[in-house]
Length: 335
Image (cartoon, rainbow, N blue to C red):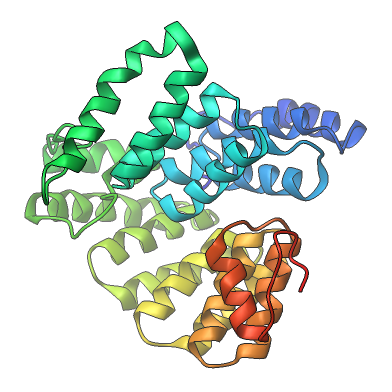
């Protein structure tokens, strides 16, 4: 999400300069990757993702764009989409050490120990002497696979800050909410208290800054983590009322409506997102899944084919497209 910086104004002049570089050479990936990385460093993750998705639709040699987008998505906890882009980067340029290394790390963070160990082994071979520092990680992964039913801890335990401190910190910098969202599993009692503190801060900020859709987006995410789906939906819809072009809020609403058992509203919001971002393959994959779950196979097949035409990768997408249309789908998306 693109959190508003309530203290430091965004440098729109610099952003404009970087966008002009893209306009002058729309087929070169460097402009998109530099803009995307700069926006991500500024905390404007939604715009960073949009810039990289635009680059994937227009630029040649897109491996770097897949790599950067995969890192951003995986870093936000969307491992499925992040890994898909990281895998695509490796498929396009399999001899790039950093691509293979980052794929290994993302697989490990997602709990895919075997895939992580395999990618680490390849990264070590590509790196030569400088890759020896990764061998201990490879041994750790191999040991984890040899131990029946056990996995190594993927990150050290995080100490939960004092609740009052969390509320003050989020009030000063709402982007900190992202760090409070558990990557997987249900939040425990202590984490729930910090989420409630963050919610109080976001409520006050949204009341003071009613024009910021991102504050309501964050409020929706927090309510979702707390299991309060109706409040989460209300906040997501408020974000969309403020900014109807907010594609990320559309996709959040899709997830929330699915969880609440409302497939019609989920489909409507997914189609809205597809209208806003017609070049995002992941949106069409999501729409295909919604339609497939309703038994609307012809429409699902159309959505999956659109995703494949836009560069969606993965055996599952091709298999779903084939199942929906009753014909085989090749790597290039043709039947």
